[in-house]
Every structure is written in C-alpha cells, then in structure tokens.
Image 1 (cartoon, rainbow, N blue to C red):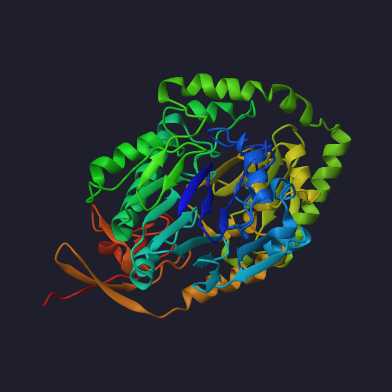
Image 2 (image 1 turned 180 degrees about the vertical axis):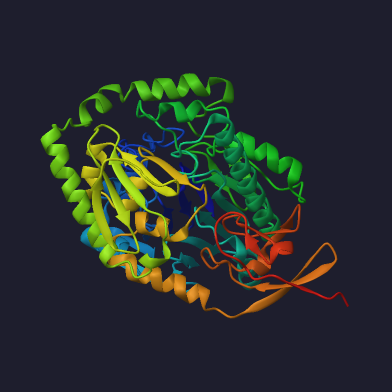
Length: 519
C-alpha cells in the first residue's frame, strides 16, 4: 500500500488492485465561501490526480467523509472521470451528501452504515459514523495485504479507537486532525487575555486527546492532517499570525507528541502535499513542492493571499439601506421558520439577537419560549446570546447558496454570550437546517434518556456516573481524570466535577456523579 498526501484530509491510496481517494479538497476557491484555503497550497496536485484517475486501469473509489466543503469539494469532483468512479459515503440521517453526489452521476455510490464492511478489489473498507446532530462525520479503515490505514480526519470518535483496534487488528498508519476547526473562541468578543487563555486551553486539550488516541491505536506511522486551513480573505488574514489561537501547525503538534507519547519508535513525519508513504517499508518520500518552514510562514501566507487580492476586492456586494431592510425581513421569516419546528424551544431561557455588522438597522430578537422573532432597537437584557455578520454573507444563506453550518464556518460573524456558557440547544438552533431540527431535538432527548451507569475511580475514590456525555453521547468510560477530580469527555474535552455531583464546568448539564464508599 502506497499513500500519497493530497493536502488537508486528502489521500491517494494505491494498491496493486485499486485506487482509493479520500476527501480530495483541491479547488482554488477554497471552502466556506472562500474563508478557508488549503495550507500548504495543493492546487498543483489537481491536474496530477485528474490524469492519474483517467489513465488508471484499476477500479477507482473516492471516499467523502462528510459534507463540509473542506472535505466534500463538488467543483473538483466534477472534473474527474465520474463514469469510472464509485463513491463511498457514510449513511447519515441527513441525506444531503448522498443526494449531491448522486447528481454527479458517478459509476457507483455506496452508502455505508456504522461499522459496515465494504469489499473492494484487494481489500476491505469500513466506515465509522458520528451522526449526533451537531456533528456529522465519519472515519475510514482500509485493510489490504496485511496492512491497515485508519483515517479519522475530523471525526472525534476518540472514545471508540480502542474498540476499533481491538475488533480490526493492528493499525499500520493513523491519520487524524490535531488542530481546531471551529468558530469558538475565534468569532467571540473576548479580550486578548481571555481569548488566548481559552485558545491555549482548547489547543492543549486537543493535543492531549489525539495523543491518547495514538497511544490506544499504536500505529507504526502517524500522519498529521485535516488542518489547519489558512485564511486569505483580508478580513480574516490576521488569524494566520495570532500568537495563540486554535489553529496550530503540524511542527508544534509533532514536538508535543515527541515529548508525550509512550511509543518512541513511532514515525512522525511532517508531511507536505505530494509526499508519499510506503506502508510496507515505513519510508516517506518527500516529493511535495509546497514545503513551508516556520521561519518563512508569514511571507508564504502573505504571498499566497496576494494572489487573491483582486478576487476578494471584487466579490463582496454592497447593499443599499432599502435592500438591507428587505434582507432583515427575509432573515426574520427564516428564523421564525426554524423556531416553528424547534420542539425544545422552551428550554432556552435567554434571548438571541441577530444583526448585521455593516448596517445600523434594528436587531432581531428571538424569544424562544414564546416562539417569537421581533425587531428591536438594542439589547435590553444582561443575559443574552448575540450574532452579527455581514449582510451579504447572511444573504448567501437565505439564498440557499450555503447552509447555516457552512455560514458559521466562514468565521465572518461576531458572537457574544452572557454568561459565557456553551448551550447545546442554541448551537443546534444556529447550525441546523429547518428540516433537521426535529431529528436533532429527538437525539438530545434520546441521550438524556439513556439509563446506563458506570463506575470509575478517581484518586482512590469510586464514583458512579452516567455512561454517556450529555453533549453528544460520547462513551465516558473512555474518559480520563484531569487535575481537581475533573472527569474529561474523550471526544470534545467537556469536564465534569466529580466532587460536585458531576456538574459540567464546560457548559450546563451533569453526569450525576455519586461518590461510593471505598471497599
């Protein structure tokens, strides 16, 4: 098995019998309305991969892990020889990914359920799904000729990696995300000290979570992938150069691993797009043309951004006040529609405000218990959640050019919340499409109604806790103890104070911890 790194979460896997491509993101327009771009730049690999697939006499398979545009790149996929390609995709509750791929009219489309084995020439593919509502993602395990490649990409199934290895045997190569890829704290109105404190906490939390997964999987090779992206829009360019944020680059993470991992023989290459890994020999060929050193990073990014200066100058429409007023009414109708199908609306006690960053027009205030959206002149409460974004960016959502989740990942919004406490239901209301609201709410209720309990030990004391995290249902038996008797969720790092009845310190909620008498 030979693995060529395509950049970000993309890989080309070659065996004597077949070609398997994972998450090829190669379009020069980036992703999320050109908010994210590939780092390092991998656009030169597009024609090479196109020709490789056209000329291949072997069966060709392309795996798409989920519908985020830094993994699912329909514009690039349209340039491929679709009449000889079979897509492998997860069978999520939301059918959007399957439907969009079917429109491309490929030679085949196989939608796999969790842990379902898919035979392909010379090997077997198995997908592992995380379909928890707020997260729709998957991982892939490819086994061939005595070797196995587990690619977790963005998928946070860290609580399952031990079982994956136990059920499927040794893993030769592991690839997974190590950097952040979200809008918190990036888009929140924090002072610099608080911003850096939260960023540092999340960065170290992610590093430790992935290190624990590597220890569990025990691969021979670890490939850092699936991020970070870079940001070339002039309004986002500063994110690349912040002293501390949630977007660390691979050298920082690899340095952490070298000091942290139990297995010192693990191969930890800092791969670049175009590099090739021979799995049998564990040899890495440094073929990548775009190899960036830390000392040249800033000049590289500024040069990269310079190529898009005219593109960004020409793309942002300017709306008149009359058009902004009409857009505000359109937004009000959309939010009212989302609210009308949000069955858990009464649980949200704080109002949410929407507005535009480029207009002084009224805000929209969402009263969740009353299921009402009304225009107001300002924020009256001390406890609230607020969101502002450019009017043209909101228009893209309302015109169905992008989903609400894709909008959030543009990072072009500004958020505030008082108190500063994460609320799953507010996030769900913001990110979900109206047609997904009921399923999301049902999923929340299903997690709450799970009655399983487990016993854990912390500093010599045994506790009985809920087995599943109230956030997105991760298995807490795979969690770990942090300083101060804090039980840590293995997926998203939520922490629960065992000596305070399992109260969540990351958000609201509890794991109902009960201290048991020692034997």
